[in-house]
Image (cartoon, rainbow, N blue to C red):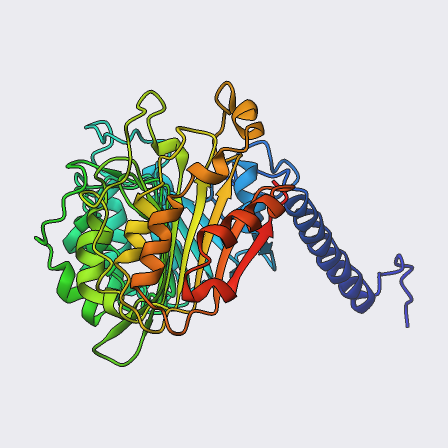
Length: 465
C-alpha cells in the first residue's frame, strides 16, 4: 500500500476548544473593561458610533444603551450597571435610569427598547427630564411633549415600566404640554401602577389648586414631592379642580413641598385611616410677612385641620421686609386655629431677635389664644439670632442690650392667654433661647408667668447658636 507523506494535520478537537476559549475570553475581557469604565464614570453612553468605543466590534455595539444623558454626573446619580453577553444577545439594565427627553432620537430609542423582547429592563427610579428646554415652551420643540405621551400611553411598555417605584418629572410646563390634567390622570395611572413616590421638580402649574390636583394623578403613590415650582396665576384657592373631594379619597401618605412660592408650609404628613377618610398628623408651616396663607387658612384646615395633632410654625425672616418697621402679624392675616381641637404639640420656631424688636410680640400670644384643644401637651417657643442670611447692622449691639428678652414676646399678654385657656394636659412650656441667656430668661419667665397654672412645667433650653 502506498504511503503518502502528508503534512501533519492539526487536532481539530483541540483547535475547536482553543478557538472557543479565545473567543469567550475576548468577550469576557471586553465585558470586564466596559464595566470598569462604567464604574469610573468615564464613558458617555450616547451613541455606539462615538469615539468612546473604539475597542468594541460593530456587532457588540448594537447592544449598547444609547438613551441616557451624556452627562457623566447622570451616571453617578443613576448607578447604571450594564452587562454585555454574546453578540446580538439580550442585555440587562439594572438600577435606576435617567431619561433625558430632549432629543427625539433618544425618545424613539427608549420606546423601541421597552417594547423589544430581547431586553430585560428593571427600573427602580425613572427620571424624565426636560431641563435643557426653557420653562416657556416654544415652537422649536413641538414634539417633545407628544413623544412623552406616546411612550406612556402605549399599552405595550406598561409591562416594562410596571416595576418603577419612583418617578421624577423635571422642568415641565403643565400649562402648555400634554403633561396636564388629562395626561396625568390617564397615562400615569395606567402606566405606573406600582409607583410609590412621585416628584415634580421645577414644574410650572396654573395655580396651587392645579398643583394639588396633579399630586393625585397616580393613585398608587403614597409620597408626592414638589420642589421649586412656579405658578402662572399666583396662589388661586378656587376649587375648580375638585381638590376637596380628591383630598378625601386619595390614599396619600406623605407630601413634601420644598421652595414652593406663596405656600405657608414646607411639608405635611398624611396617613389613611380607612378607605374614605384621611388624617393629617403633622404640619410644618411657614408664616410669612404678608397675606399669603390660603392653604393653611382655607383648604387644609377646612378638610383635615380638626384632626391635626402636631403644628410647627417657622417664622422665616427672609420673607419679612426689613425696610418696614410696622409689620406685625395680626389676626387679619393669621389663619383660624380654633379648629385644631386635637392638637397635642405646638411649636413656634425661628422667632428672630435680629430684626425689628417686638415684631412677634402680640401675634404669637394671639395665635396661642385660638387653640381650643384640651389635649395640648407641649408648647415650644424657639428664638434665634442667626435666622437672617445677613445680620443687620447693630444686631450684636442690640443683643448685648439684653432687651430682646423682654421684647420678643408680650409676656403680659402671654400670661393672660395662659390664664384664660387652662390647658389641663400641658406638660411642657419650653423656651429655647441663645447660649448664655438661660439664667436671665428663667428669671423673666418665672416672674411674668408666676400666676399661671402652668408655671410648674416651664423649662428653659439654651441653644448653641
